[in-house]
Length: 327
Image (cartoon, rainbow, N blue to C red; front, side, top):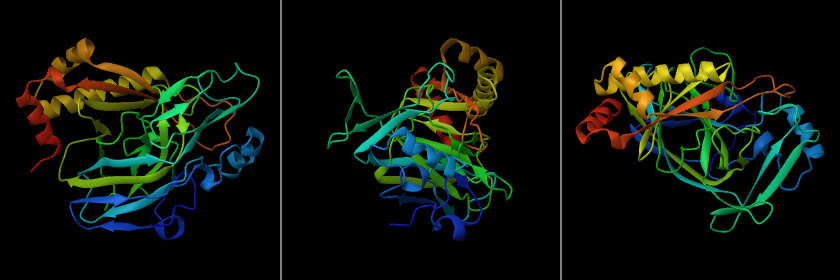
């Protein structure tokens, strides 16, 4: 077990001051993160009233997330890609959903802040809501990032080409997130465990929780032409785009689909554009909106594109895989 990050929601260069340093010196290695923290430096506890939680938000102006990292991978260079495969995730036995005033898709529609706590069953399969509503859990990791170029601290609330606050609910056990390396050693940060989330995360929280057990396998692929995060599940490839508006995020996402799929498959950019209109599903990842935030950063709006693998012949799927994971 390694100590957790004391600073909250920052990805920095100063591992000795702000976190723990783990060095992986092989090309394919798992890293285990047992007993991760809840938000606000592990100060979020079951049953706190909203009034009790509010000082925590003010105490951590950079954001709520208790980050872990960095993991440094020897030999990782800019121009490489790190594949992050989620191999295990078991949550703690509780979580919550909440919204303060002035955030989410409807920042002015409610007069009182909201918080609801969940207890999970021992199997960690369901969460009971109100009116006998039972929600099947689908745990995923909200934040994985390589350190961006430069030396300035970056809020983990943000999502960009380096990863960060992606909140892609498809990043469940068995899925792989590909991130372009931007700094020597990659220096990977993780955090923000969820039990369940809908696309859009419209009130700005999912079922927030932490992990009893979390394992990620890291593998470096040399000289892969990838310029933004790419998620691979058993059935799909998923690209993501960010913007100040949903319009901007959709356009950015579409351009990434065209750029990546064309370069990885040999299909022309015009054909990929047409294919995207006919069969790719574009979904709102995060409708972030903060008019009264306690935090110094505001997450961008995000749209992700789900590209179903089963429309492609096996030979083309194999070609795409070879481009992502060159021998």
